[in-house]
Image 1: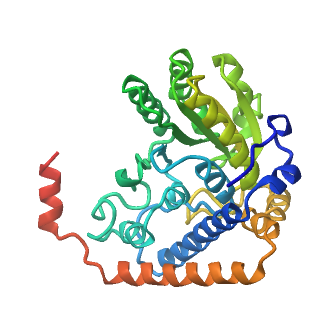
Image 2: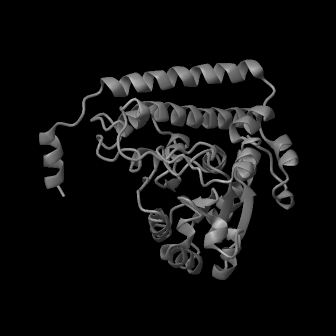
Amino acid sequence: MEKELNPGKRGDVELVADDLDEALLLEMFRKAYTIRRFEQRCVELYREGFIRGYFHPYLGEEGVAVGSIAAIGRDDYIVSTHRGHGHCICKGGDLKLMMAEIMGRETGYCNGRGGSMHIANLDDHNLGANGIVGGGIPIATGAALGIKIKKGGEVVLGFFSDGAANNGVFGESLNLAAIFDLPVVFVLENNHYAVSTPVEYSSRVTDLARRADGYGMPGVTVDGNDAVAVYLETKKAVSRARRGKGPTLIEAKTYRHGGHHVNDPGLYMDQAAMARWKSRDPVDLLRKRLNDDAKIREIEEEVESELAEAVEFAKKSPAPSVEEFLASIEDY
């Protein structure tokens, strides 16, 4: 496992990398590569007509999910977003059940009723994704309040975007979490666009972590493309939360590799900025930290095999019948 890290080296990637265990870096690479290939395969399946509705790829943002979720344990909780496949994979999601859910099959995590934007897996303490921008922020806060009332030792990671940070629930939730010292880490994935609106057009303060000052909690901006940097900042925040010191706001700056969803070409995006961010691709950054090419190839082959099995499983799975679908509505 990783050694004790120097808290004074916040954001110093080279020193941090030297302190991390090779096994941890390999596992982080496996997760990042799995997310990348899962999302790419889903885009292909969408074009082929196997996936319907909206689909919001996590391509380019893998470092945030990989780094932050590697810093918590299995008993800790996450609350995801509508761009949540990467979070689910990192929290232990089964690719077969995920793929079946996204294809709307009965064998999926939510029996095909949730689709891409609403996967939940309580067995892995994944409290779920949702289609409402910012909708997960109060859910994460509520879960943390529940942990505190029960005197539990778990921590919650609540993921949301720069667009969600302008919703009212952001302020309400962070204020409540701060005054009650709740064990929650707010992970703000700043991918620079709220759908098509650049963050510079929606906020006078583009380092959104500075907003933490207004709520009396630590706020830090980190390179979201560097999973190791995200990991280290999250470890500090999780440790603080477990010691009863309350929440932290982590702003992970990153850049999605395309439009808001699979049918959005993203022509409004700054192509020069896109090129700069792609030159620091989160999967490649992790690959470069490793010195074992044979192990890297082994991992990639294992992921490709697992992904192929997941696609085959989903394609062969039945869709919910009309009768079952109508019966499930009556349950509500």
